[in-house]
Length: 539
Image 1 (spheres, rainbow, N blue to C red):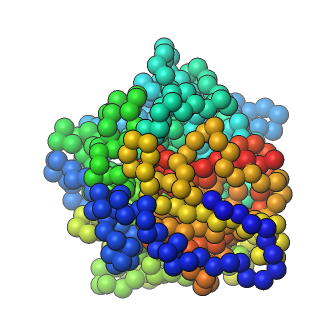
Image 2 (tube, rainbow, N blue to C red; image 1 turned 60 degrees about the vertical axis):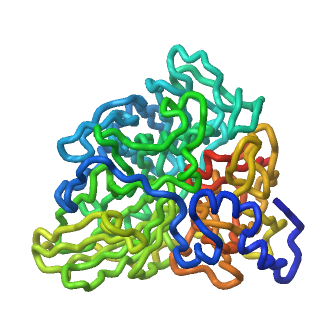
């Protein structure tokens, strides 16, 4: 990691060697079959290895799309709402006729959706009835540090007496400890002020070294922030507003969720088998927990709030009719809320943890027609995601205004008090290969970046392979990719940006809201577990 004071004029460029990510990445790239950067350029969104399910898979577009239930408050007082969620293992029917054990929030996959109002605080009490410690992070939340879900702030299950990651070893790095870790027994209250723009957030496990398998087993759910101004725009709503959590999984012959963990109990030894060091991909595409589902819609506009909750799989989404025609994907929002104005796409790339808010107009599709959502980066069964069947003609009084929001921050490069440089690359840990930021593995006891509350900074990031980089606490704007203007899908305020192989990306943000210890990291969940995180201290 390197920093320097911002100065008038153009920031220093990134060398070709930095941009290609040559050096430390080559060992892990060879070990995982990724090849060189030149080879990666031919398939820039394939980072990882695919697990193959061991049982027959259902045909696509037969299972109805589930809509996650909205969680009712357990109580309301003083202008704030309180929710309760129990984390527990349960058995679900994910594949038709097959019973699968899953770790869940509240017994469902995904967990229940929490609907919040801007400026109205909520507290969520999580009770851990699972066999291992957990941590809850509200991804995209503008959250105080003590509720942000730091990876060593563990909620311990009843009777847990074993050493915990962050108090014992982690990343194969020997005796690493976190002197600031906060441990809770069985329950913990997470408080979210909801002082942020309306948007789609998601909550998931964030336990140090074991985030990837915990999410894979089911610990993920949605949270939506709403406000009056957005609701007055006339966007599609009610049954025509659909949350879509896309995730890939694989299944054993017995119908269990397959995952190549070194320790299947997720109690002691972190990590995955060597072929999957670059990321775990599944061969079954789930949407809201159902395989390749279908959903009946009116011949009208629908708002699709899309989350890529996959560990490592990237998608390039396209809406295709039976006759090969494509429907526009009209983007109205990004990770952190509405855009200033709509952006029209035919293909929409989405990296792990990114969210896109899009409107699709089905009015020109004949009744009975099928619209498939296709992943242009997939092959075989992973090329299909889900489908919509137009069931009926219907009136439609919704609209997509030319101006969506006027409250986007107007940070300029000249406002930055500092420019920092970061590399996201493979490297060597004490006892094996891993993934590093600025050449360093994550250490909860080390301070990596310190920023002043209210400071505006420009961050320049380079990657060897594909890395979706997520900043906690703040949203940011993408300034450039390889010195050129950002891509159309970079519009708006984001909290996760997809770095492509050999690419240099600049972002700008303001560190406001709360002081304390936060994180930034790669959201390829296997990379994250293998040390690709860093500490961000706001003072």
